[in-house]
Image (cartoon, rainbow, N blue to C red; front, side, top):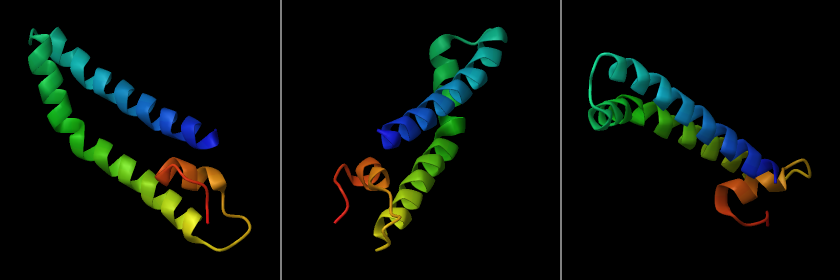
Amino acid sequence: MIGFIALAGIIVRNSILLVDFIRPEQAEGRPLRDALLSAGAIRFKPILLTALAAMIGAAVICSTRSSRASPSACCSAWRRPPC
């Protein structure tokens, strides 16, 4: 459950940033489609890096053999419980 909340937070943050990039372009008179494509092109790399950082962080937590390894990290990264 905690993994889903973490992933939802990342998704919401990325969507808010996309909207923040789209609104000024629309205020300048650009059509919605052009503003969407421009914002997507500008924000694609940061969104991808954020998602990869979350997955790598979950992989590190899940790969430890410690009893403190969080099962939610494994579930959010690979959709399966830890070994």
